[in-house]
Length: 277
Length: 284
Image (tube, rainbow over all chains, first blue to last red; front, side):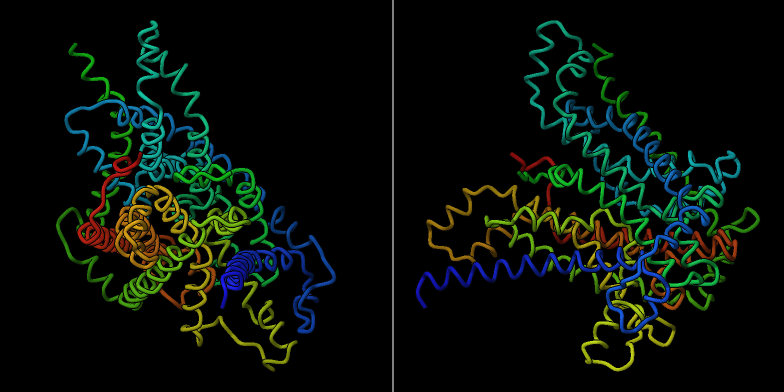
């Protein structure tokens, strides 16, 4: 085999792998989306692999009759509150980690890394009892506070590495020119780190948007979208909803996330240290 | 001067207090709920939990699930990341495709795979129309627990390999080209370089990916409820049922504490056997 043949074969193999990845990821998504619009007759017709009659009936039922629209709204409110609280607390902490050397720093850092590993499920059950006393049970603020505990260690670690990425000399130069430390932070560091912080905010949003265990336990009437869908689809009876409602639900849950990943795909990857063009 | 030394602590204080309140308090409360009765130490709740019909099955299934899924995801992610780390046309598109599932929740992933594999789902209809099978293959239902388990594994691989992939790819890109070039100068082939340079330098990434995935595998919940209901009991779902349906916070706390305990032990093992540095160290 000569070199040219080898090169060609290698290329074919590369694109075969890429093609397989595409099919593997996108086919289930495409099918779920399509089935979300399938009429019951087409779905139960064994000869129709690709449905021909499409309807938005089931999606509308889930959205408006079964309350998914409220679920979406609740999810967004909870996620935004989670971002606000965890950034309010996490940015100063991340900054302290990145800029100061102080006794006990390693211990504190290690504990925060450790807390990131803490399973949120352990929090949820005792929180119910606390929340009943504090009248936070079944409130969006309650869920957001719990989601903040889940995302805060992550926000501290990620912001500290973002701040560490801005050279200290820039800030020191600003101090020499008469800015205060807070002023230097606001005028120099913050603008330089905004893209990174935006990425961290989006990741926090996704974490909160997808979290289902705590949201299910801490709420009953004010459910976030995943918690609501879970109770509709796998409710007390165990999968009471007919199949075509499940597909409509999948569509409703996935579409916003897809739109989201489309706009933020660059940040989602760069945040982990990858540079994509 | 005194005040200056306080600044970092003051900046850290709110976050640390918050975490202590929201993680420390529930943890203590969980132990209290699990091991007391009428204010005194008691193993009553433990006995109630252990004698539950689903208890041992839940532990077994959760561990089995982690043992099956984590090695598959890690291997797959490392292979894909090595593949995507080379330069070729269409590489960026491939990476985008691989990270799409990053934002899909486990509940949605469960529903998506249900549409592929349900009796009237895509796979069955396609196979029947091609003529490979005459009657649908049933993947769901109490009689097919083994298949349900495999479907959950499949759906989780589809959904959650992307986070492992992203972490490993980020790690790969942090390895300086110089090491690899130096090895090439000394005549090291691809496999030698992989074994002696790339994989050892990937250890920190592999470690964090392993910890994150194992932890989430121990908490598996939504996808199991969607695809298998209670056919396959797992720890988190049993804890949920004890709390919500049976209204027994004590037993629910025991399930939660088991998840925490198992996660802690496994994370400690990873840290011990895959020594790695912190996030910032080693980064240029």
